[in-house]
Length: 393
Image (cartoon, rainbow, N blue to C red):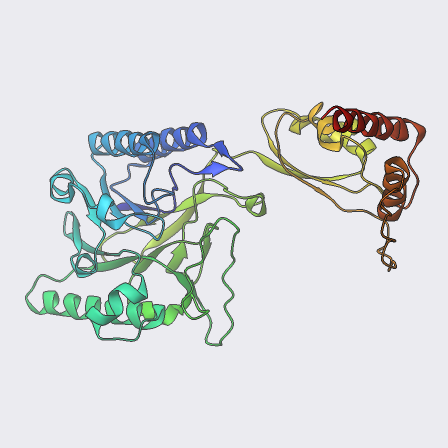
């Protein structure tokens, strides 16, 4: 039996206001090619299939097309809701989808209702825990409103359900648990989970993580929420998001995990890297370097660029000049190479002070040099224009 672990598709996501619809479509096409090539039996999506609780029409169309293609390929899909999803909207039509092999798990009650997968004599139960906001579910569970208490109660309930099914002769050979949470393999108070700018904070009382020990005893735990693909332990893993959604994910190798189950053998887990990318690049340097370096030629078109300019002083029209070379500048920042210096407060201008001289003093105070003759001409023209409008008012 082959099971593919994915999460955090975030359909509808934008990258610095640029839609990622094209990249998401490319990922779905690549996913279907991989599913056919590998003979995948079941696809797991561990939360945040959408980026918003109110998904766009384009987003719902992408998911509809993906699920239809997967269903036609004979692949079962188990999809749990994440903190970005609306569990109510995502649960619409759940019974209909269930009959088609798409299993939606969006409620607390769903967490102890496993999806049964069979392949010959092999029986696997998949328990999908949706994102459970502690303040909404703690009372029903009779626990404190913390992630640790809520997830601890739910995983205990799963163990109880599995034991009862085993006692009735309905037990599984393997148990897989899906969860959308921050899980860390540490016994200390320090969380070592790699974070990203594109992940939404889910902390309660300043704490958003739980120890991996809450999932002891399960054969595999398919996690979602963290966007980097990595193992918390050998059998507890984040698949990460299929695409990078922020510049600090620039070097992530986005992908999924393939779990292969054979009767009488230990699960085999292997990573797979997606070829589809959100092409992004951080470029640092002076204006001269950024405009003329041949090393940056590949990033002129088809890349989202984050540019950090390092001239001693900020050049006039810096972004416009850079856009003459780089098609898409998604983020711009300036970091002067001049050491910061303590300065006394600038003198207050008098009421009858000459505007051009006042601006020249301000310019020299901020940028440590007087206006050039060309800059002075521009300021003089602006000042005269403002004066003429004021006189004619």
